[in-house]
Amino acid sequence: MEQKTTEKKRKQRHGGWFAAGVLKGTLLGGLTAWLFYRNIYGLCLTPGFILVSLLKERKQQRQRQKEREQQMFAGWIGFLKESLQVGYSLEQAVGEAKKGMLTSYEEEEPFLCAVSRMQKKLQLGMPIEEAFAELAGECTCEEILDFSEVLFIAKRTGGAIHQVISNTEQMIRERQETLRHIRAVLHSREYEVRLMKTMPFVMLLYLSLFLPGFLLPLYQNVLGVCVMSAFLVVYGGLCFVVDKITAVSL
Image (cartoon, rainbow, N blue to C red; front, side, top):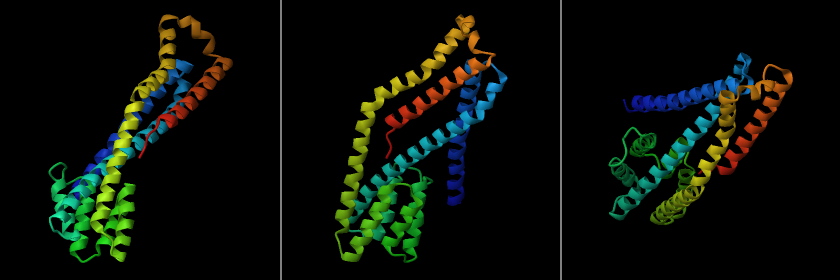
């Protein structure tokens, strides 16, 4: 039952970004065909716009998923540390930490479902370090993989598990705080970038509506199509470069 619910939610999230990508790509492709070519053949570019839009939406969806997973892992690690402090073993603390997470998140969250599977493996006798390694394999958060590797070494060498958990929690918190600061600094720049991206379309739309004769030489002839195509390629390249510069990822 739990697995079916998780699969249903996964499909809903997949359908969400896919539908958004197709819709945005179709609208942008149709607008570009009308503003740049004023010709039905311009719609041939629409599949390309849809593909680019899908790739962008998918990347953003994965980034949001990764950030949420990292946030949940940081919270879970915090509960794990508290459980160890009150005397639970590491194996028992896994389940106790999950109970703490359920006060803020639904049990169907992918990360918590992975923790539930890990808990069942521990109940069947799997070593804790192997269970964490498999948890890291199911998740996209790099901190989980790093933690599982450090935990493996600590268990084999008799290291301080509590200190490993504390250091991991602190590292994630500091990284999240740094990212929030960077995004706050870039927030105003992002609005400027969006404005710059829309300006060519706004200008062409204005000229098309209020000065239609001004753009006529650019339509219905080979030279005009070449000029508009070259402008579109340069514009697309600049948008790609700007997105790379302003991108902030985990």
